[in-house]
Length: 326
Image 1 (tube, rainbow, N blue to C red):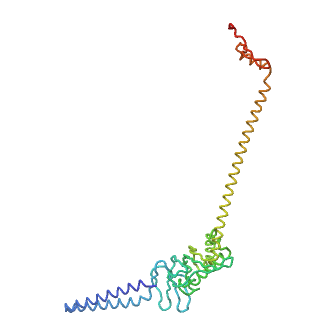
Image 2: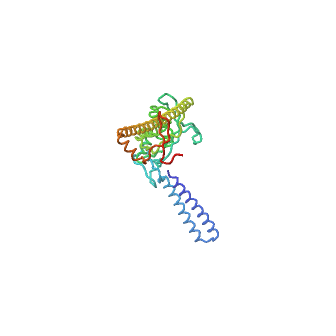
């Protein structure tokens, strides 16, 4: 509340004591009457200033940056709806009290690990849709709406840390149970983890918004389920991966067989087309072969000489070539 003011006043009092001590020693050395009068006036002024500061000290409160001050009326026990902003503020020390509250961003870490500094197990325990117990390590960053801090204090009558470890922690557990309780463990660990975190933050904000608490970030840090369940999920994942691999291999072989069939059909069609073309060519050729065409082709190729050898049923005879016989 007024820590800085206390430190300043203590420093001023210490400086005055040092000044008075030095003035006393100086007066003793000079020994003059004028010096004694000056010393008395200095002492009187210092005492008056000291008394004034003692009187003013309870009437001044200093609010640190990032905080607001809650004005508590001691006479009636009520809380002023208007908070005090950072800086110096005058107050009536007999009838009012100032409670300082932080409005800067804070982070609440709830984990099973004792190294977080709380010295206790703060994990969140919920149940999945299968009824299996789950333990979660989570963290939440939040801010307080400064204008609504007086109402928050009037509701809980305690500090922010106590509210966080009590009401806010319970709100986190209820929100997680609403969301996680509708999902399977395998889905939370896999494709729906981000969705679970988002939905939990939405539910959490609905619970905290009436108290001026703004959820800036919610994180699911660690997820623990019974070992038997985790083993079953791991086995299922392995089997699904193997089935997917076999399906991919089958699909690959199917595509390859279809490709081979298409290639074979193409080759057969090409051969058939070639055979049909050859048959048509032969048919056309056979139709064009007439006796006159054959005799014409033979005449074109005859060189004018008669055959030298004849065969058949008759004995083969050497025909004369036009030379003399021996």
